[in-house]
Image 1 (cartoon, helix red, strand yellow):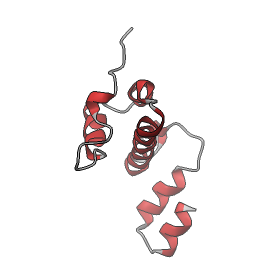
Image 2: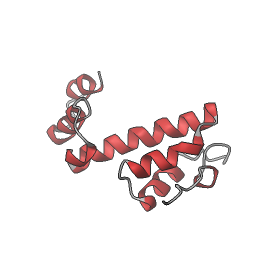
Image 3: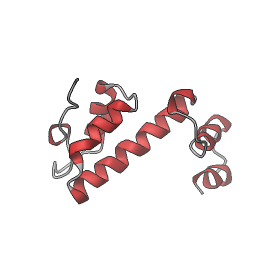
Image 4: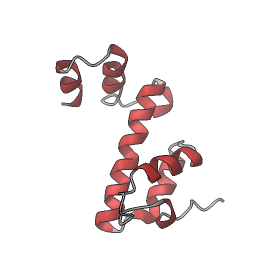
Length: 100
């Protein structure tokens, strides 16, 4: 559905291609840079919503890091999802992944 919307809005071909990559069952590491950005962005937003609504934040950070998202990028994306009033999910509320 998102791809059809992107097409109807006349979004760029690279963006439409990145949207099409989301429907494929390939690892995100095989996607274009824009495709990976969309893939990670969607997951960060989903995990943030889950963390707010279902107290599921304990595994969100670990899952994203395991999927290959860099720690600094995750932190920046997570901060961007923080509501201006500070009442939502923040990097501090999601435990860091345990090593080993």
